[in-house]
Image (cartoon, rainbow, N blue to C red; front, top):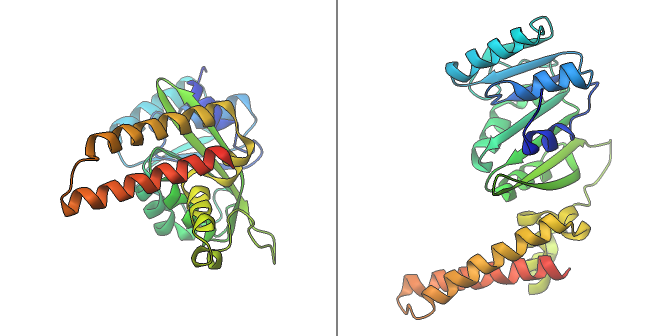
Length: 247
């Protein structure tokens, strides 16, 4: 099976020996790849839509893996039960929906060993969820595929007594404005990504900054209350992005 560049990149974050649950599996390509090529012992493929799940069933049968991959019609993780999966993959949706699924699936998270999360938007919401959970982010990455940039987060179960070092401590936000901007940069774009400075990530940040600079140019003469507020928001975002590039 040949995965897309994005899905291959996501799959590389999965621990092969863990039982996998793919939430929002679509056509089931990642579970099939993991079981057939990477030795994953068992996988659950869950999706809220019957059409894609039927296609997944067909692909699983074609691969001869019906005894190792189980499909379930499920809203998020509602049909994934406690102690079934060690590795939970959620990709291909916005961060707000992803956080909703994670919150509603707390029963399944209790015994999970790792989360592989690839939000298309609002990655900051996902990072805040992980920061408040029993998991810690230990790897972040970004891939460019078919004209879009995709971030991938890997979070593992925190060790007993372990304190996350992923972010500037919350209490420094009011102490110094630049520290506050740094904290927001880490939450919005990822501390590991910022410090690793991968070429694809810097390319993404530069395009992001140019987008907001163009927006600022278009609204710079808007003197309405709403226009001034929007201009201040955009200026702040440019400041955050610039710091992320320069750190």
